[in-house]
Image 1: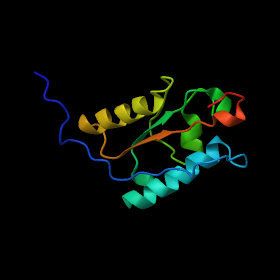
Image 2: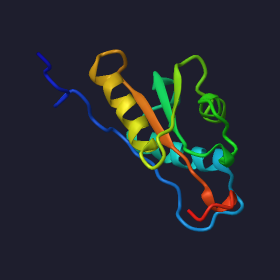
Image 3: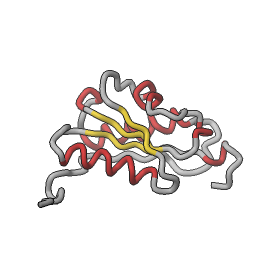
Amino acid sequence: MATGIKDKVAIIGMGCTRFGERWEAGGEELMVEAFIECLEDAGIEPNEIQAAWLSTCLEEVNVGKSALPLALTLRLPFIPVTRTENYCASGTEAFRGAVYAVASGAYDICLALGVEKLKDTGYGG
């Protein structure tokens, strides 16, 4: 019988970019900005992250169709990285993947990071 994940996972840190028209910043810069704030909030080092999920819906933010830009941009080598895409729920998919990875006991510390920059793509956003 399923026991659920209650009390098996905690969010230990979060980061968010400054909102507004960010013409000078690309997807990679936005990822770094949020990542640095998250590390500081959590009080951890990048090498403590054991797996990561990147959520982005549109490849037009120039991060491609894989999760490789997450590992390269944030310098997280040799850990599993996964890209999730589920339109407006992409961030939730990344979060869910990280949560269940920790809840299952596969990892202790995971990262879920989402990035979109629609104003640079021509979409309304």
